[in-house]
Amino acid sequence: MNILVTGGAGFIGRWVVLQLLRMGHHVWVVDDLSNGRAENLEFTADELGWTDGPVGAFCTGINVGKLTFEVGDICDTSLLRKWFEDYRFQLCYHLAAEINVQKSIDFPQDTFRRDVEGTFGLLELCRAFQCRFVFMSTCMVYAPFDITLSAIDSTTSCGGDKEATNRCQKVSEK
Image 1 (cartoon, helix red, strand yellow):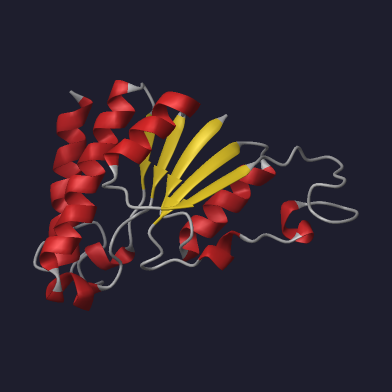
Image 2 (image 1 turned 90 degrees about the horizontal axis):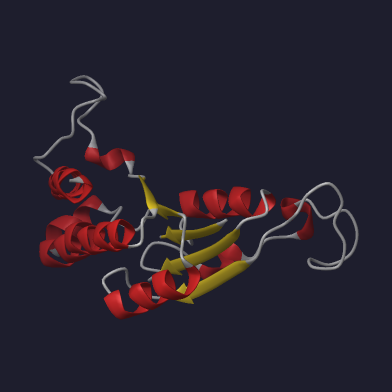
């Protein structure tokens, strides 16, 4: 299966990508590296389940997939449209978002552009190319534990962006 992972070089994205590769999928990752690191996508043979030799040499029991990584911005619609046209993704895991609350307060326009506008553009591409969409988010968007774990705290900029993104997703589903 061809799968797009946005924000795949981040901490959580790394583990999502690794599992998808172990399952034999071809994974494309786009990440601007504002929170992630390219080294997160440098998997060892042991991590991939290879039993002998360097990655790519020998494997038993697992059909390890292929990884394509590009440093890029999810707001770069020309890159993403080309990838959607060329690779016909069946699934998109969306993890690209601002994870630093202070940064989202200091630079709200950057956070809104990436978290809301970028997500909406991605949703539109998924709709146009009939690609399933899985939205993953940081725990920073939720209210403190003593209130409730299920309520989004829209008083923070991260929570506000999450709420706006959820609304974009509902509109895009129609």
